[in-house]
Length: 60
Image 1 (tube, rainbow, N blue to C red):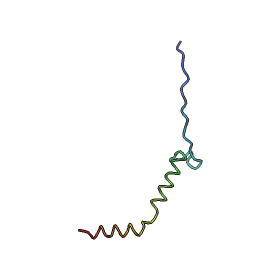
Image 2: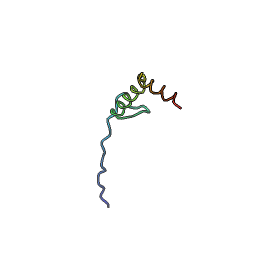
Image 3: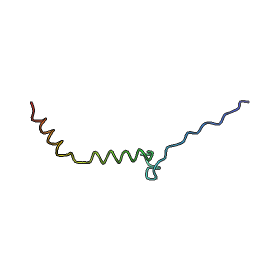
Image 4: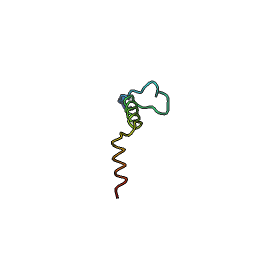
């Protein structure tokens, strides 16, 4: 008979309560990072950047 060693159990990342059971299971830190990214993407472009882009568009 062979002796079996207990398999190692790896700790699972924490998953937010909202994400449990859903198709978007992510650890809490990933959800926070996604919210931060989304908030930055949704910000308006500063006027100085708009001016710079306008200047670049007019250059030949």
